[in-house]
Image (cartoon, rainbow, N blue to C red; front, side, top):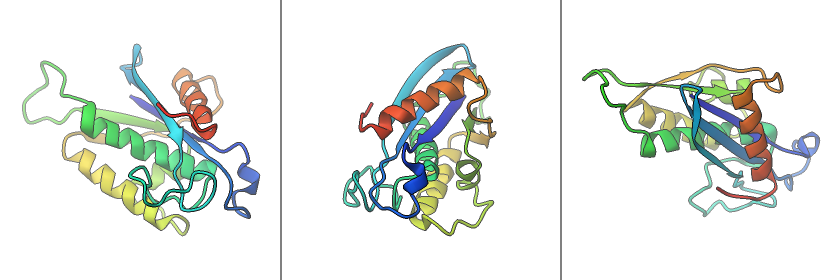
Length: 171
């Protein structure tokens, strides 16, 4: 299970200002029993304090917001799964393992599957759909929205990590 979240302390300014910082974070749990890894960082955007369209971390976010933070967290989680998660011992041959991704953003949940038309951040949406397709080569990927700030330990940890990312920290 991978819990994801985005953070943007100044989200109310995100639509009118390009200089708003956002962060993303995710936590990978082994069947909810223990943490396998945690990752977080700032959302690299086209504009604003973390601008860097030429950087490899740039995934297409135009500006920082809770939505771009949440979507970037899902993208980073999918990249992590593809690169680092291995099939469990004893897995049935020919059956892809299931990875459940639990975002607290319905925007981030809908973006990789293309269920909603994304008018903002089309480049980020395309990057996310591409990464989801790549991860689906190795895994069965399922998304299940979790209501944020409702005493879900995995979501709470992802929220803490995203806040660190919004402050400019990386892991």
